Image (cartoon, rainbow, N blue to C red; front, side, top):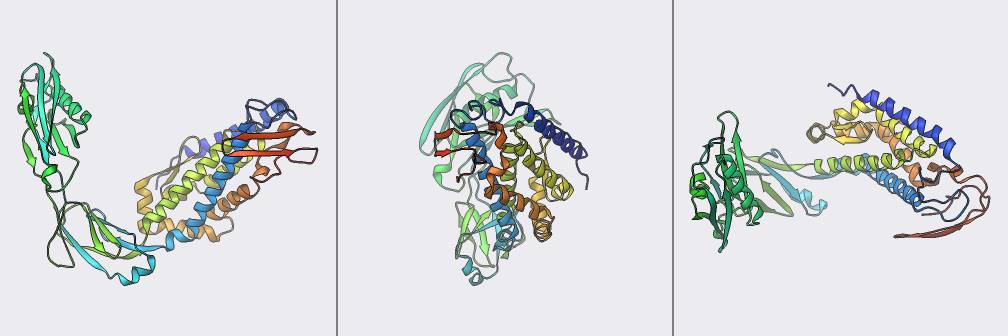
Length: 425
């Protein structure tokens, strides 16, 4: 597998930046009012800055979330069972019942003959750049849907091309909020374009039908937007070779807390069996990535605090050591060192079992990714004050500090007794 060759150089650059931040801290620690805590007064005087409180709250919240996500990846994410589809391109399943009832649900098969769809009007394919051949000036057309008629207008200029008019009609339809979606589809090979109007409501209900007619000018007829190319339709499916069923929705109830979302027709039956809940697993990875990025961002942005920079460096050390393995399961890194997700690769890793293998194997190893990152997150969550530099406020302190803000209210004394952060949040 080809890995981003620039990742290591980017990480080295980040480490250098963090190191420079530590050095800069020593030059600014006694007069630091704009680096870590921009709202603070001078060290040892006045009120404790709200930016300091925000920083502590940020790293405590992010580290707690990271601990929770890693715990889920180490335990529940891969052990949870649900009902799964053998072909998610045809249908997906959702089990909302009690997990203890899974054993009462037998395997089943579903054949999808047709999915529910909305009406489509697909206009004529016209030469996109050719001069529009219809009426100029104000063109007004009426759309009737759900028993209600709405008139829309466009202004056709002398030099407008076919595509210009199609785009004007599409914009007018989309802006009207009628439950219709209009697009102009371009074919670069043939140099043609067409106007496509589709109902966002599926099923054969009469209220889902729509008509487009000209009122002034001939824009609807000229573009072909008044021609129905696909009628509205219901879903058609069968379960376990039984009788044909119909549904005006593509979400169908299969009983016992199990539903299926029909996505495409297929001649082959799709099996629904008990299996691993891959959605839960991939969601746990997303939670881990989000909380990791929150923790890294909170620490890395405080370039004036060596302890914050030390936390950012430790996060980079752990992630960079496993960058190749992480990218193999869909977790990459941007130039700032924050994690990114390749959804296709993540899903493939989950389906193949590589996702579970990575997180479970690295949980058991003392220096594995899951174990190392989990220990660090737990430490930050339990001992948050250890990741903020006390000396930024000076070494001798006898002032009373207080802070009040939305969601926070606290008072404490700092009387030459060590860290001013030795209090509970």
